[in-house]
Length: 149
Image (cartoon, rainbow, N blue to C red; front, side, top):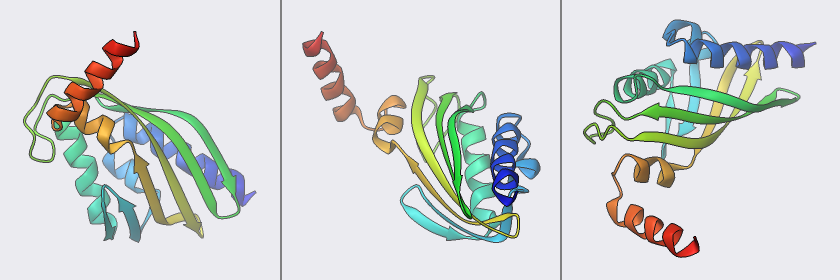
């Protein structure tokens, strides 16, 4: 039963994320949550709030589509794809108006119905290339695509 509740909580958080309902999204997490992602580790709900706000400013149309959600004990894995148009400043990079598609995985550790630790893995290179933050790699990637065709 706990397994179903944890999966349901992750699905609801994804729905709240897509609805841009930050408080609904953050309700999944314990106030002291440990978040591993984007090259660093942060403790507390504030880091997740900051990430939510930053992504919303940079990608106001952003959404995630879930491909898989499954559970093993207290751990819930969520494989998703991020979609969004880079319409605002993000991580110091000005709006590029480029559309981003980037796969990701979240691994949530639950304790008494709340996520107490989360690992976020995304394709950072694909994400940064898409917004023009890594122009040399973007150029090399475009050349490789052209050569392969």
